[in-house]
Image 1 (cartoon, one colour):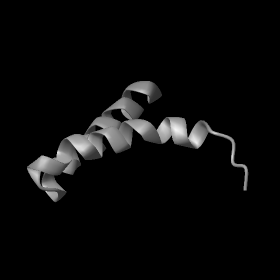
Image 2: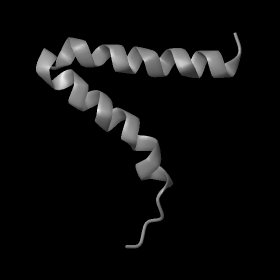
Image 3: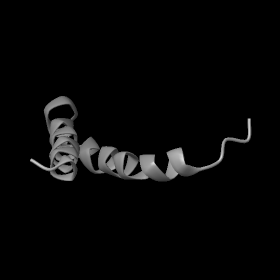
Length: 47
């Protein structure tokens, strides 16, 4: 299995776990937060 495929499968598994641990109405919000993490990590820390 290629590393990129394994990474993608892991990320999909994390996203699917949201439904197991949060109320249904919160899942879209959690998805938005999850999708914003790479951009937040890419920003320069000015502290």
